[in-house]
Length: 529
Ligand code: ADP
Ligand code: ZN
Image (tube, rainbow, N blue to C red; front, side, top):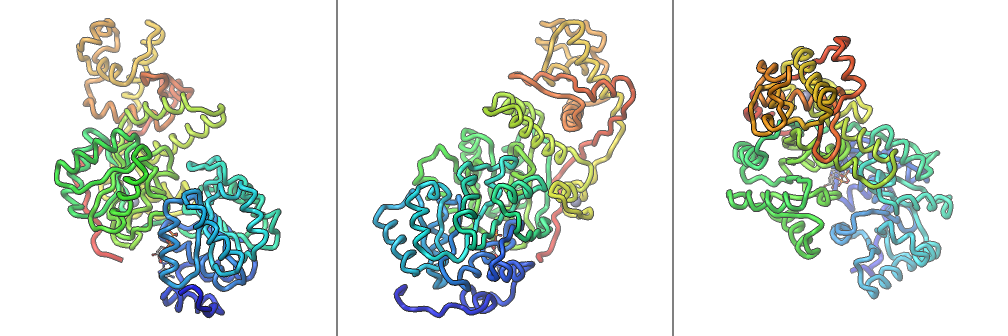
């Protein structure tokens, strides 16, 4: 009964024990909470599952007034508020999905000081009525959740977040805490600058998720590869499968269902009610597989997601980290599995070339993609490379595919020269550009219809590449792309040279390549944590 006066917890520990029922703080929670309770601003970088919510919920309970939480996760607000109310926390939310009488009720509770926490969608703050409402109440703190949404450099930019810098000007004495589970150094700095968090203390937790096993395989028949993974290692487990397009979400979900895996689709093209139903089934039932576009998952708190599979290449390492981070919040062994192929690179380059926005924006997208490719093609520990991307150090982990089945590095300079000189010849002698498929057919000396049509069997480079198998050549092309020694452009993914290519052709640069190990299912790390 909300009308009953409840005893406000005096201290953070009391709130932790009595309201949330936990014994002790995790990681830096206590320091963060003390800092905010004391009125300081904070910027918190902590991986998914690290326990960010308590960092603002407890200060909101301990301090006088209402804690205002800005969150883009409109679809989850009802759930979050219900969960808090079940603990006896007086929480409410305001967003565009609400009926107006419901909104008026929450506003009245806010003004009467009968709320501990008020969740607000960022677009609400553009409405003058909302800021007027906030000015009439008593605010204990502002929490800015998913703070990376303010960063244009990041992968999840939301223009409404830019307006949040005004909070500081209108309420200079109210502490602000910004939180995110993703931040490279660049994003981190951008969040601080854009939210005017100049005086904030930064709390940066380790981004390592030791229970997640990272694996990246080359894509050949992705749906079957996925099915094999699920059958061999994750029968009956809950998991998320990410696809780039709505169509492939539908197809993959149908394929899994046809093969006896309980799978549900989720993408922005589905009716809102279907999306909501599928999301809530995924959260409440055991062992469902959600096949989704990246529209799904932010803020989803399901502890026992045992695997996250990507059937298409994520657009950035930040996105990859965040999506894979939804696996294993409970700390139990989990798999992050990605299948990627040359076609992904071609397709994404094309999307970048045709994307809206200025040249700087396209360069940013290209840099994101390059970093993702480098992660895919590394011969080093995936975890070390991931942590490096976030400016953190790690040791080879023993729990990723490159640690478990080290790829062999070999000197690929000669094959690289053959490949690049084929590209050069077509350009110089014929003024032609072709995609990887045709170049590889030429190298292998295959007389396909297209080779004959273009007289490519008459080129001096025809058949000079028989030392590698087709799959190895495709791997070589991917790696040259990842190393910036080759580029793709245009609608057909034609291969073109880069500045680096010239050095390889001139023999001034070695090209280390990784040999694709024959990958069966990598052994799982056993034991929980
Ligand atoms: P994040 O927002 O960082 O992804 P959450 O705040 O959702 O993480 O917390 C992840 C899970 O850990 C939640 O189920 C939460 O209740 C639990 N949790 C957080 N802090 C503690 C703690 N100090 N002790 C026990 N469980 C905690
Ligand atoms: Zn490793």
